[in-house]
Image (cartoon, rainbow, N blue to C red; front, side, top):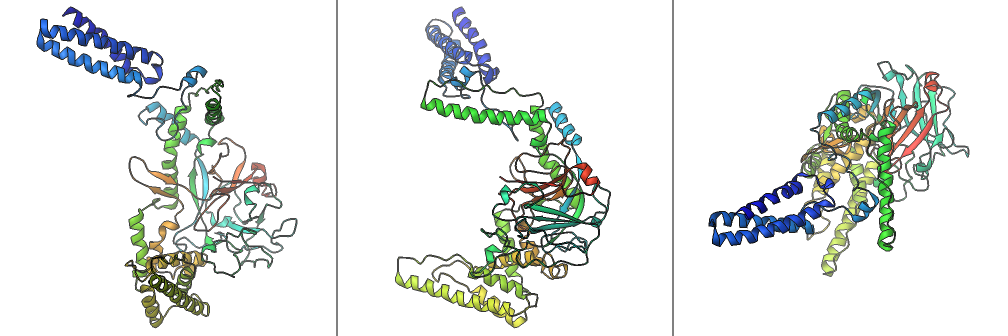
Length: 577
C-alpha cells in the first residue's frame, strides 16, 4: 500500500506542472515531464493490479483507474496529440517565440492598469476637428455654401487651375469658412477650393502643389458657380471611372464632374490611428511586422535548404504594447461616439441582408413610384444595362422564348428612356403614364419558364439610388424625392456604419474632415507631428469617388502657413489599401 501511495504522490508535482505552468514556459521540460508522468502512472497502475488481489480492493480499483487515465493523458500530451502546439524547434534554435497576436483578442479588457493606460492615451491625443458631414437626406442640413463636387464658385479674377501642359484639374470640393460657427485655427471667412488631377495616375500623385493638385483660397465668396472648361477631361482620363459609369449607355460621353452634395461642417473630436501613436509604440508594431516578414522568408528558405537555420531575433515588446493593443480595441467605439456627438444621430447600423432586401422592395411598393420622370429615366437605363442571360442549350423553343423576351424588354425600355429624354427630368409623372409604366414593369419576365418575380423592385431601388445622387446638390429637387426612396437605399449612403453581432461590434469609418487626427488606410501621420491636417477626404461610394483603392487623399499645411493664410505650400498625400 505504501508503494502505491508513494507512486500516486509522486505524480502530483508533474500533474501540477503540466496544467498550471503556462505553455510558453514549459518547453522543452514539458515533454520530459509528460514522459516521466506516463512512466510513474504505469508503475502505479501495475501496483494497483497487485493490490487489487492482495490488499484493499476498492482503493486499488480507484488508484488503477486514476493511474491509467493519467498515463494515457501524459502519453497523449508527450506525443502532441492534445494541448497547445509545441513551438517550432527552428524558433527554439533562434531564441524566438511565435508572433504575438495583435488586435481585439490580444489584451483582455479585465486589466485595470491597461484599461487606464489606453483611456489616458485617448484623452491625451483627443484633438478638435471639423467633420465635413454629408447630410442624409441631402436637404436635411441647414443651407450653406460648402459642398462636395459639382461646380466651384470662383471669386473675381480666379481661373480654373490647369497642369503645366494646360490640362484642367478636377474639382473636388469647396469649404466656405462662414459655415463654421465656432472658432478654429482656420480662417473665419472666405472659401477654400480643392482641385486634383483625377486621372489614372492619381495614386502616384503626391507632394507639393503643381501639376497634381491646387488649393485656391478666395477671401470673399462668389455669388454663383463657374462653368467647367470645355476641355476638362473625363474623370479617370484614359480609364474613365466617373460616378455614373454603371448606368452609362454606349456612345455617351464620360462624366467630367463629381457628384454634388452639400457639406455641413460640424465640431468633432478626433483620435489618431494606432500607427500614429508615439514613436516608441508605433515602432514596436513596425518592428514586429518587419520581423514577421523576415521570418517567413527565412522559413521558406529553410524548407528548400535545411542547412539554413539562422533566423532573425524577435524584438522585445515595450511596456506600452499591452496598452497599444487595448487602445486599438477602444478606438472604434470612441470614434463612433465622437461622430454621434457631432451629428446628433446614432451611427448607422447595418440591417442585414433580409431587412435590406425588404427595404429595397418598398420603393416599387409605394404607389407613387415613379413620382418624376427621372425615376423612369434611370429605371430604363438599368434595364438597358442589365446583364444578359445566356440562352439555355436544352431546347431551341426555350432559347427562342428567352431571346424574344429580352428583345421585347429592350424595345420597351428604350421607348421609356426616349420619352424621359424628351421631357424635363424633374417633371411629375401623370397618373396615366404612371399606371402604364407600373403595369409594364410589374410584368417583366426575362425568362418565361422562371417562377421568380419581376426584376422591377430591385431596379426601382437602384433607380432611387441614382436619382438621389443626381439631385443631392439641388436642395429644392432633393426635397421632392419621396421618403420611401430615401429609406429604401439609406444603407448605400451612410459611409460610416457598425455591424452588430456576436461578441464584437465591427465599425467601418469613411468620413471627411479638417484639422485633428486624420484617419488613414496606411500609416497615419504622427500624433505629435507639427503638420496640420488642412483637409482629409475619404473614398465614398455615395459621391462616386475613390482615392487609390478605397483610401484617402490628404492635404497638409505648416502651422505658420495656415496662420498666414498661405495655401501655396500645401502638401498632398494619397493612401490606399
